[in-house]
Length: 99
Image 1 (cartoon, rainbow, N blue to C red):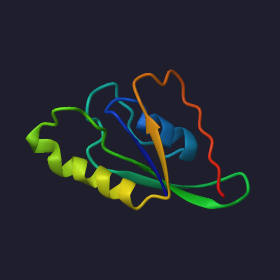
Image 2: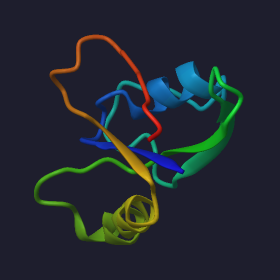
Image 3: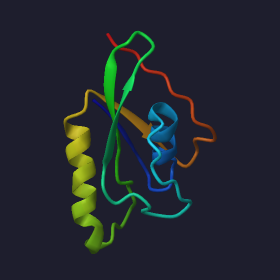
């Protein structure tokens, strides 16, 4: 399993859509994703991987969003691979290496 983690509004849903053709809603606003979304995709070698779009990080998290944020920690905790995104990522480049 691979978790896509990072700040809110950094492009995590866009990356999930690009990798898996998930059709997840992409919005240019804070906390457009309030629940993790997981989709499966096959890598070029045929190996299938679960990719999860998580709730974004933010400093000074509002109290009413703490439960949604806990789900991000749970998804990251059980993932084999983490892909972090930040506001500085100008374009989506994705590569994965399985050892």
